[in-house]
Length: 72
Image (cartoon, rainbow, N blue to C red; front, side, top):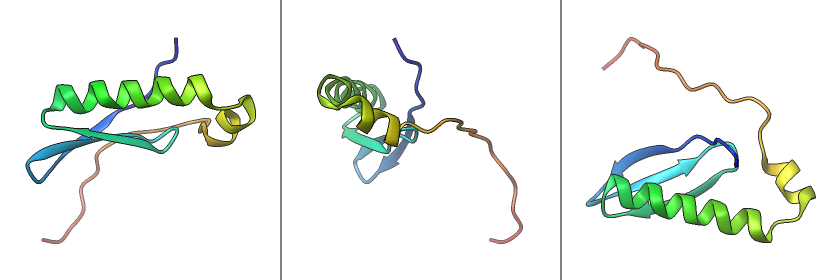
């Protein structure tokens, strides 16, 4: 089992889910559907990708944070 990040945001009438460690995305009509579709896409990637491909795409460190910026 791997623990990966899912960033999910609304896009139009649905949601887009992104795994930034591997740059793999999916979508769905709800947050849960987008998350589940991303999980399926990631599982398919790990089933079919070579070790070399996984190593090339898998980021070593990932930091997700919020920040404030002036503007508006």
